[in-house]
Length: 127
Image (tube, rainbow, N blue to C red):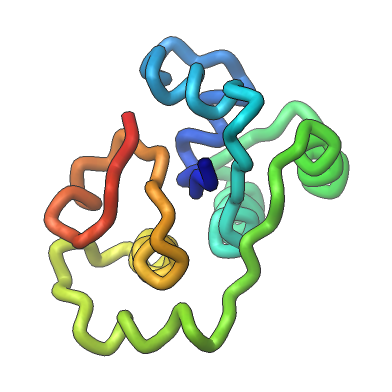
């Protein structure tokens, strides 16, 4: 299965945070799961670090390299991801999350997230 891992889910997974559901953790760890992280999530992490709203244990480049070594793949922003933004209702206003939702729609990929703001959209939420 291909799985799009939302920003907070990635951070919780990496840190072993107890907020992460057992289902989410087991799905990410399953050998048949290919885990993707949107470039929007990497951007969001960088922005939050620059605003001192997030502290990583490692410098950002090391953090990113470690996730790649762990098998997380980067989902780039492609032009085919953008058309769903035009008609996407504003149930969720966060621009990072809106892009992740559109990527999941275009790629027909479930999203691993605890964010209930994703539920009104035509995406499969795994948590």
